Amino acid sequence: MEIKEIVKEKYGQAALRVTTGGSSCCGASATVKGCGVDPITSHLYDANQTGQIPEEAVVASLGCGNPTALAQLNPGEVVLDLGSGGGIDVLLSAKRVGPTGKAYGLDMTDEMLALARENQRKSGLLNVEFLKGEIENIPLPDNSVDVIISNCVINLSGDKDRVLQEAFRVLKPGGRFAVSDVVVRGTVPDEVKRSMLLWVGCIAGALQDEQYVSKLAKSGFDQIDIEPTRVYEFADASEFLASAGLDSAVLAEQVSGRVLSAFVRASKPI
Ligand SMILES: C[S@@+](CC[C@H](N)C(=O)[O-])C[C@H]1O[C@@H](n2cnc3c(N)ncnc32)[C@H](O)[C@@H]1O
Image 1 (tube, helix red, strand yellow):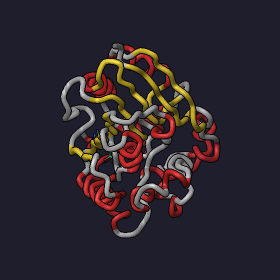
Image 2 (cartoon, protein in one colour; image 1 turned 135 degrees about the horizontal axis):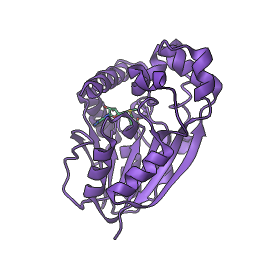
Image 3 (cartoon, helix red, strand yellow; image 1 turned 90 degrees about the vertical axis):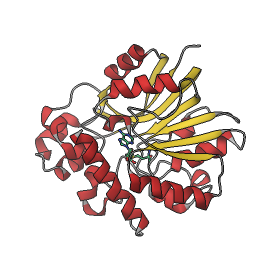
């Protein structure tokens, strides 16, 4: 519960920063000099994609990958974005599935929902709906979604088994799980895991790649694959650690190369 409240507060503040003309940067990097070059969240979308949606949705982007670039989305399909933030991936998905399809965004933070709905209004897209709720209790019926996307959110949940079970429940048979997330290769020091600040910055809550695979399989998914999209190195890690007040010199070496953004795919069997 405590984690959820901290996450809500941090992302509420991030949404308000965008609304008042700032940048959305938050999490571990929020305490680092303006956080303009966040190694996790920057340079994820190409100009072709960002040109299609309101600028505020781009500025609010806090993901760690680009699920809409990697997921297969077909006209007429129903897409659900877990932890949709300012709505960037929902709006891009809505364009891909077209007027006969639908894109849902789900988020628990009121300020993010307000920002996302305003971005939808500016986009003029009608096949979009932002839902308030938690990814551990998805407010949609069983077998109702073709594709689940998510961008740097599942790592923030304190109950990942429950999130994956819920994702499985709402997907139609044959439905696809296509998620960008931070994962850890090998082990990360306990000191890092304990840091709430790093949790909010996506790292401390990240699953080990092997754990992710086994949790997906336990929830019923098959065709599971984890594809690294960015591997964070020593310099990136030392910035994260220093921003959380940890001894960066010692810990960065242990974290370097073990924290990565990855695209996680799986399917619900037919
Ligand atoms: C790192 S941001 C990512 C936002 C968006 N996916 C993007 O790429 O910009 C995390 C978002 O997930 C939401 N979130 C985190 N944990 C959640 C939960 N358990 N249930 C619903 N939303 C959650 C936060 O409110 C925040 O908007």
